[in-house]
Amino acid sequence: MNSPRTTRIIVIGAGVSGIATAITLQRAGFHKVTVLEKGSDVGGVWHWNHYPGLTCDVPSTLYQFGFAPKPDWSRIFAPGPEIQRYLADVVDEYGLRPWIRLNSEVVSAEFDGRTWQVRTGDGAEFEAEFVIAATGVLHHPFTPPIEGLDTFAGDVVHTARWDDDLVTDGRRIAVIGTGSTGVQVVSALQPKAARLAHFVRTPQWVIWAPMWLPQPKLLGAVLQRLPRANRALYQAGLQASRLFTDVVTRPSWRRKAVQAYARLSLRTQILDPALRTELTPDYQPLCKRQVLSGTYYRAVKARNAELVTAPIERVTANAVVTADGREHEVDVIVLATGFRPHDYMRPINLRGRDGLSIDDAWAKGPHAYRMTAIPGFPNLFTVLGPNSPTGSIPLHDAAEVTARYIVGWLERYRAGEFDIVEVTEAATARFNAEVASALGPTVWNTGCNSWYFTEEGFIDLLPFDRATMLTMLSGQEDGDFVLTGA
Ligand code: N01
Image 1 (cartoon, helix red, strand yellow):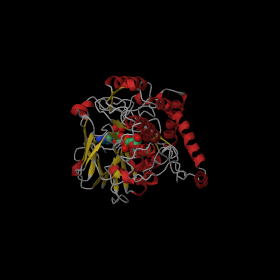
Image 2 (image 1 turned 90 degrees about the horizontal axis):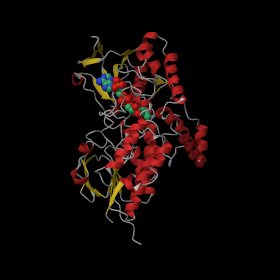
Image 3 (image 1 turned 90 degrees about the vertical axis):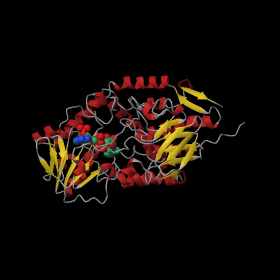
Image 4 (image 1 turned 60 degrees about the horizontal axis):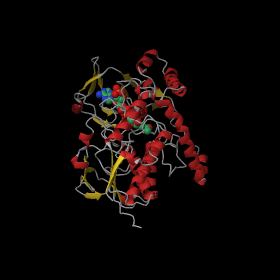
């Protein structure tokens, strides 16, 4: 019997999906793995984001790896720094550090017909049989092209690149944007601001939730002593999360119930009719990525706060000017304006078979086979790539399931079954047609603008439940791929 082939693998990114991938590879006995990470530490979004008020609005029980459930979260909804620490701890616990090269931004990855040639910004070069892109979705901050923003004399900061030295207490603050981030940062900054103006272009439904609830210490202590119970709790959470998928993927009584709760959250907390009108969206709850907060409505009602719904016209040296002619004088502008989520892997000069660039391959928007394989890009896979279930299924779980699927291919390569694997256009088109049809009855398709939409107007999410995802990624269907060599 032949000895297993050496398999060199480059993983791009050491965030949630990169860590899940590296550990899945490690557990399958792959040891020639290099993880190239652009940031100065692991953690992905949890490394880059450290704005005031950063909290995970997904319960911690579901926002962790199945192979490393943490027994003792401080809160039901963990604060950002604790999640970042958890991710770093997992990396240490699994001894991954020697594989990870920090401050290493991949600038090009080219397939030469046999192997991938990968280069980082500092000029280092790597060769590998496989590349796995775990580059994340919410990675590139979006700065809106507001006239005069660059002439503002005070401080301008994007939430995803927060300056920890920035003083906000006692100052006049403008926060632009009302997604999950805007709502969290407004709640955190308002109490100590001199004044806070929240610029809301499109109001959001904000579901009331007690984000501050501690996880009982006793529970943490018990789960620490009983790892099996801890894993069982995680599994129970995963099973329970199926109910949430149904809420977003098709009309159901559960969707109606959550939407009624969203409306109730607004009605019971905002009693002033004028303010309530301004805060009432003209689309269904859950259509955009749902925002949860137990403090936002209180913050915008405060005496030092103002909700500004008139469109922003321009920024001057000391003010944000709105279309109604008002000049809102401020000292600090906080851009909670989100990300460019569909720029997967870009601006890497990514070139697949015969020099095909990812920009050309995706001229009509990002698309992949089952979230992970791209025609024209042999021996390359993505984790949390196009159509990832960022709106319905726990993220860590989706990353682990995808990583296991990829490892299935790599094991076959290692066993010498093929040299090159590439998904076909036909299989990718078929998968995308299935997705498009299943997106019809989703709540994301009920008439709102959101970051889920690509520029081409497609909803970049997975409209299936977890069971379907598991089936979809349970084994390789050779008929959907071209296998060559060996
Ligand atoms: O970004 P967003 P985010 N003038 O894209 C507004 C995850 N997350 O950073 O709706 C005025 O949702 C824009 O307005 P509009 C989560 O998945 C998770 O808040 O386009 N406003 C919108 O209000 C989330 O969904 C956690 O009209 C402008 C806002 O900016 C995702 O990150 C915590 C504008 C952008 O909202 C992104 O959330 C935080 C302009 N020119 C975030 N341009 C967890 O707890 C844009 N806007 C896990």
